[in-house]
Image (spheres, helix red, strand yellow):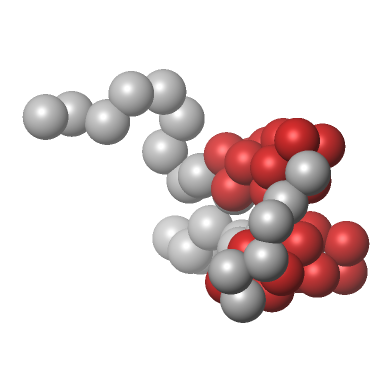
Length: 50
């Protein structure tokens, strides 16, 4: 069976992530965009088992 294909972030999201890792303040819009990208790349949908 073929392993799942990994999704790649776009340039915009990569730029926002870099800004966050540098400790710079993000706007609310940037936070939402980054969070949405992270959640869309989650390979396991739904809640994780405890």
